[in-house]
Image (cartoon, rainbow over all chains, first blue to last red):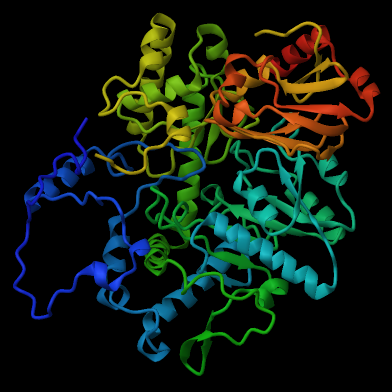
Length: 481
Length: 129
């Protein structure tokens, strides 16, 4: 393992030379009270420039991303990010502007925001929206705030949000933090939301339903139109989590399935960079009846000019310091224009075809949970392997690292024991998919012949198996001498 | 997988052992095995009143966070503070590492719980699901 930058530091070594300051220096102890000053050495590393560059370049070369290899992380849509998006977002007019500039000097970026909102509204079948949320979960939070504002305006007190047991953990979390009570709906034996289970929870306290469609098993909720009807008849609203939107682009729209609020993950479906915690973008789109409650500022257009509109009396208010992750939104718009209408539909067709090809090819190696035609992703269960050979899904995932593959999502969704959730995305070739199948075949063979090897994996990575429990319980977050 | 005789079990995989009128509650070997390495336990508050089926504690493992439901109604009289420092005790000795103890307000609720044999059968159907 490489040394930390602190460990290669040499006291007194500098990589720069500054001219003598014209401003007299002051002793810091004389201007700040003692309690505000650090009492221990901060351990700032001291190195030559070349050593800093080598250190970080070498670390960067160990990095794994979609530009390096296959990354089938289920539900995360780790698709390739076309480099034209990067070129466009670095145009001077986008890169060198300031959020506090007067609107008349930034008409270009305002127009882009207006037009991507039009495009996303068309893609989702909604009326209008906001680009401000910084991530999917932030979008969910905004969606729940909109639910609240809508019921408040109607003078109704509705407290319950239905969430299926296959949902992303952020759904119940967002509803809970917005003050709703969560009712978990059990999936049927086919892995789908059952009409009967929904019927049990209809009442005057029902605020709505939050789901992804296709769900986290990669299965399309075929009863959605009937379920939407039931929810609406009971006075509730429907929230569409766009995490799995890559499966339905240009095929079916949440608006047509009768959803009221949608968030999209630009960092998934619309090919903006993803991973390492951001920067994400989770625009929210709504039906006409919820437009009056959208956050301020709205991107508006009047008399030939775009402007930031704060005059929205029923708005839930600001939900971001400025206007969202603008450079990410520029990338997504570049993607939408490059792909066009037919291109986007083709994205989903290829994503679904790739997933079904992989599902079929892998099903004789590791069983598929809820095995039927899937959308953009599917879930395998490592339970039979664990029962027969004592090798867990975690072991299998660790072994994939040795073969230069980023493992899929594991142990999610929670309703599948020893789950491996695989999403190949549309950008992978048949050769890459075949290579992945071959690797899984090898690993399954190794499990049968030499399970001990798999328990010890990974063997070829810069660091070997990490102690997850210690990392969770006693993380060392700061270097100390 | 070990299922200790003489204990009562719930469908959500908690066990109950009654000692001098106080019911001690933990999670079964089956439950700790499916959760994986446990890193943190959020204990209930002593003296709080709970009803059967209430979510009273939380267990966080490297895989997921899971709620613990009280299988009985009553007052929480004791919590296992050792778990605050050593949550892994639940993995090592699930039937010694109780999570909380309840003074029962309705001891007949015990009769609705499964005995070891019934629980074993229940786990088998769960596992084949």
